[in-house]
Structures are given as C-alpha cells and as structure tokens.
Length: 456
Image 1: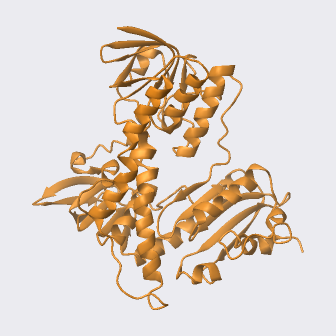
Image 2 (image 1 turned 135 degrees about the horizontal axis):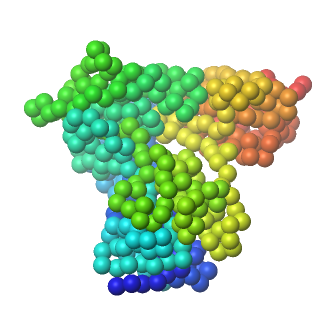
C-alpha cells in the first residue's frame, strides 16, 4: 500500500522523535519508523541506563574514599537489584514514545525501512512517499573482523545483564569501555581493558587521561595498551581473548568479552543507493544544512551524519536545525565548534575546546595552566584523590581555548567553560572579581583554575 506524507523519519531516538513532533505540530503529515523498540540509543542503550549504573559506581567510590574519615562498614553493589532499578527508567520508554506519537497524530511503523527511490521508503508491505525523509537511525558496534567476534557481548547488552561475570575483558579504550569498566569494578568483577594503540581515550587531554588511569588502577582495573584484538575463542565455560601486536600476542582469560571498540552509523539495510544518497566512511555525506549532498529530499541527524560527534545533545541540536530547514527553507547551519563531552567514570573527566595538540596543529599561540585540586576543600572533604585541570588560553586575546577536567561533578563544571568558549569570554571574566561563585561548590574552584592567568 502506498501512503503519502510530508515527512518520514527513520529512527525514534531523541533526534528523530523531536523532528516528528515539531513537524506534526506545524501541521505536516508525519510518519516515523524504527526496526527496534521505540526510544533510540540514549533512552534505552546509552545515556539514561548508563547514568543509573554510573551513579551506583560513584556511590561506592565515594563511600570507599571516606573510609576511616567518619565512614565505616562495607558497601557493595547488588547487581540484579541495580539492573531492576535501571529498568524502571528504560522499560516504560517504548510504550510512552509510541503513545506520544499516536496522541500527536504521527503514524508510527515498526519494521526495517529501505529506500525505494529518492522520495520513498518501504516498510514491510507499505511504501511511504514523502517530500522529506529524515535519517536518524543511530549507531551500532563497529564490526571488528576478527575470529570469534560473534562470541563478544555487544555494549548495548551490558546494561541488562542478569548477572555480572567474575572476569570481564573490555575491548577498546574509549569512553564506553572505561565507563562500563568502572561500573563492573565497583560491583566486584576483575576487569581488563584492551586498548588497540598506546593512548586510551585519545580525544581527551593526555595528562587528564593519565590521572584517570591512576584512578582506574586503584579501582582494580587492568588497562593494557598496544593490544589490538586478534581473536576470541571458547575455553570451557569461559573465553580466551588474544590481543597484541604480531609476535607479542597475549592471552587473557575471561567469562565475558565486551565490545567497546567504537560505533558506526546504523545504515546497513537502508539501501541508500536506491535513494541516490552518497556516503563516506563515517556516514551520509551532508552539506552545512544537514541535507544529503546528492538527494535534497533527505536530511540527516545524529549518528548517521558524517560530520557530527556521536553525542545526544548534538543530535538534539541537529534535529532543531533540520526542523527549521524543513519548515522555512535552508536557513540554519550546523556548528560543532563548541561541544563539551564527559566520561562517566569514577571520577569523571570532561573536556571542551582545543587540546594542546590541536592548538599546536593550528598554530595558535596559547598559555596552558594545569594544576591539582585534590587538596581543595571540595574534593578532600569527600575523599577524592584524583582531581585536577588544564586550561588553554589564547596568548593575545586571553580568551579561553580549551578546558580539561577530572574530578567530582566536572560533567557540570565543563558547561561553564563551554559557555565561555561559545561567547568568547576571557579568563578575567571568570575570576572572583567578575563573578562571586556560590561557595562551597566545585564551580567555585574555577577561581583557582584561572587565578594564575588573571591580570593583576
């Protein structure tokens, strides 16, 4: 059966759903389709369940850090109970999402979508014809192409394990592996991370990452670098994970090997060629309006966008841009120049703007100021030993170029620096004489970060 719409959205995550709702509110006829449960990565397999698990790990870390300083008694994670709590957040999402579509008059389809022309997609026995088609299909684990890859547990499944194995190997040294490793270690598992190259968390400042590595080792996590995955094999009831450079391979015993080695756009099966849609190695090729460079009827948001960082707030921003461009013509362009990010380990790390490496590559004259904050009242009072910062400031204008943090609540503090970068603030604009920050707070510690750089 053929059905005509103004907009068809592929994907029911936050970005796709926002587009569907806003276009429908504007009076358009809208359909949305997903092959998985409605709700997308963030709500079901990302941000929401991750924060629940990370919150438990943080609580354990906080209590252990204060042992002997007014806190006594063991604390541990009850994994089945924690997952049951996590499910109170995630289980209602698919039903609520579908009910919200129905209430808004959006036609919701379940099934795999594939292009059957530049302006149409097929879902089961239905052909949906539209003026605009939006691809918001999310991402999945990157294929690794090694023997035994099928024996690995996808990172999506880690959230819903009924029991946590005693020995877990996380393949990949990015934020997924580190976040899950800290959760698993706090829950009592023996944890190993295998990083392909010599630098884990390569997108973050290396000095901040080094401090996180110290915290990880203290938490009982074994981080192995220069360990590209070679194979995964069954070993009785467990697994043998082989990794390392040729001639230097090592074998790691595990009860579970988790794939945390990156994600790629979930575009397989869409038959993009049939829609005249060009791709590159990262996703669909788009112009500055987030419109396919080869098919003007198609817009792209979130993980499927080859230019976009794979972060939920970025996907939401993409969605707002695409809605405006659909409703009012191509008037808004994407800007990814200021995108703060955080890794929810114990303690977390956060970053925004340029690293020293990037500043040198661009030939930007800068001053770097780094320091330790573990002795600050805000951190010492909660037993946090790993807290610090590095700021990069333009040598001439004194504007903040980058901020890199480790410690409690840095996922909140980094947003202040993001605002400073976005609006061109200088270090003087963040000093005590400029703003009397609330005290005591971790945001107040910004004063100590900028003090050596402030004009006297």
